[in-house]
Length: 349
Image 1 (cartoon, rainbow, N blue to C red):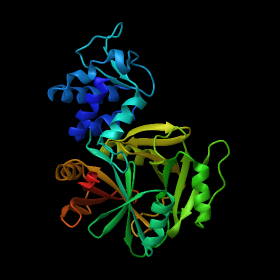
Image 2 (cartoon, rainbow, N blue to C red):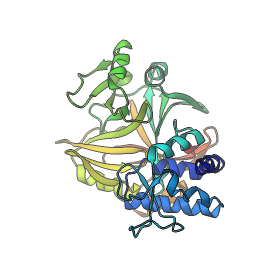
Image 3 (cartoon, rainbow, N blue to C red):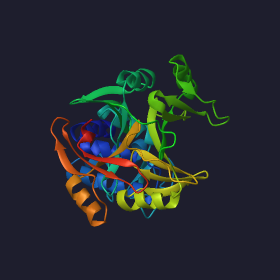
Image 4 (spheres, helix red, strand yellow):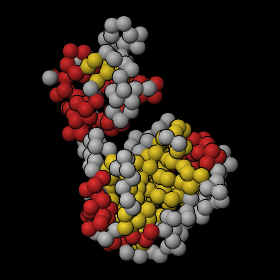
């Protein structure tokens, strides 16, 4: 078990590597997962901890196509009959070790190749206490403060609250609803009902329902009994008359990866699934609504914004340091009315 002890010690002392490894455990086997793991492995060897990956007899199986496992191509040990020489480590065991090494709760996902990951969602409300009762008391988020702002932390996202009036909820907006996945949907539904929150009937066979939170913010809850935490951020659900155009825009500027979920058009970014439903007419912009904007955490915000401008996008606000919050922010708006805040430094939470 020396390997496991070494891995725990190493990821505790080298948090950035630990974060990358935790992100890798969420990926099914793919070229992208393999590239991520090879990059991580190279960093570990450079730091003199090669013994971690010499563990064929401990917790590895040579099965590079196994779903739900991560592959590592160390190049220092050979695998029989596989040109990739890949080690596939048991996902649950590795995830347990890494969770002890650094808490998972509330961590913003590591960025993709474009330097982007999900950051936060900001709700404008005249009664922030009512929102906090839902997101913290009912759903179990962790309250954190950044200067004058308050957030509820969940794995993969922060939900922020800002006191103010809005001109409507999410219905009719281009951003129709938020989505979270939970381990026990029935329990969450009962908590919502006890708190006086309106919920739809559970969708037969899918353990899914929608709740209407204070200020008209719609939240979709989906059950996944295999979830490794009680609740986790899942998706942002857009409604537009230009699904393909909007999805392509997010792919071009933010590096989202397009796909489908059943009949739903989707695109993935670290920490969030972007989902779309078609409409016959354009929807209303998010600015001024209760769900005023979404936020992406970006790497090197000044460079990122310069690249957006070079691509022809106008910034609503250039990169602006906020010492009171400990971050740098910028704002843009997509062509369909989604207000987007870009942040650098939010990942410290």
